[in-house]
Each structure stands twice: as C-alpha cells, then as structure tokens.
Length: 140
Image (cartoon, rainbow, N blue to C red):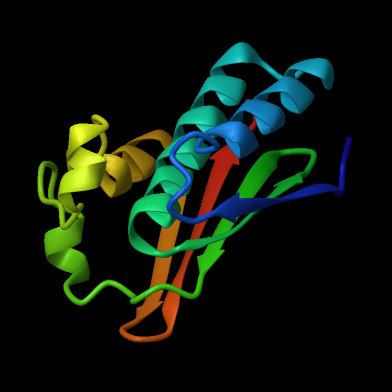
C-alpha cells in the first residue's frame, strides 16, 4: 500500500463525467481495505475538487498518493485562479455560472467542505494561471 499513486484527468465543463475520479479512488481505497471513514473523507474532498475544476477551471488533474499514515490529494488546474481566496473559503459564496446552478452545483460549499474533511489543506492560486489544492487525510 505505501507509495501507491493514482492520477486522474478531470474534464472541464463535462458535468456528466464529474465525480468519476472520486468514485474510482473510493473503489480502489475500499479494495485496499482502508477504513470506511477515511474512504468517505477522501471521496468528499476529491469530489468537491473535481466539481470546482469542472465548473471553474476547464478541468485539470487529481492525484492521490496513499502512504502508510496518510493520503495526499493534489488537485491541479490551469484555470483562471481564485481572485479572493478568503472570500472563496466562506460557506455559500460562489462564482458558479447559471448552467452549474441549474444542474444543482455551485452552492459555494466546495472549498469549505474540502477544508472540513481534510486534516491539512493548502491552496496555491495565481490569477490567470491556475490553482493547486493539496490536502492530507490521516489514516487512523
């Protein structure tokens, strides 16, 4: 199990495929015998990140690294970046367009949920260049 790395491409603007990476990751983690709570938390963090990449960034990559004591999730995109990270971290704040809203996305809970369900979270973002979110979930 240590050192297992899984990388998934996330298609932008494809709401029908949104969530495929997190479903695949959860399936793999279950097969590895990881605790259900860890699998659930990874699934939530990855799903929220995937949706953000679909809505805001025209896709990106999600990389999951499974170690002995923790799982690291790295979400990278080449989207527009986040102009006001402090505001984006507030529950309910969103810049999702009407298409996302009509499909039931864009409630402004993505980043807050990622922070809530991860043990560590770091966001590096540059307007006009993209965003990288790194999260760690401890295996207890």
